[in-house]
View 1 (tube, helix red, strand yellow):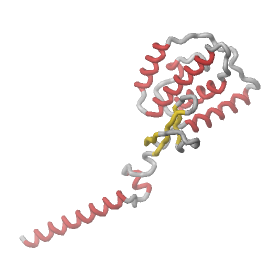
View 2: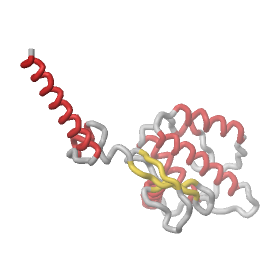
View 3: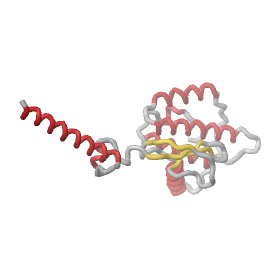
Length: 194
């Protein structure tokens, strides 16, 4: 009987030592990277992102805080979250590809279509609700915001060049398929930046 009790106490001590060691290992990030990723404790799980509004009131998301000292907030997101820098990089690549195919690219032939805002807002909400990932939801919202800016600029008496906005729009539209979003270009039905 004493021998059995001695074995049980030894097993309990071993379990306690192993538990304390595992807790210290996880708490102090002593796990090798592959093991940590397997158990979901790796550095690649979540990343800190910064968000703020730029001078035009647009939401900006970046891996770095704003350089001009603007007020910002932070949040944790997946490492492959699309940031404004990613969009700008893809936009410049798309412009380079477009300019290599065409010598001049102008948006002078924009259709004069007035979009019913309540319908567009309802469509936007439905499309965002269908998406599972935050990245896709963010992309859809950005597409609708850019489209709204283009509409506002084209309805002014002194027309403002919207070519950069349309390049951003097309770059983000391309990201829908890259990020495997459920929404496709024909679902959004944008008419200003085709």
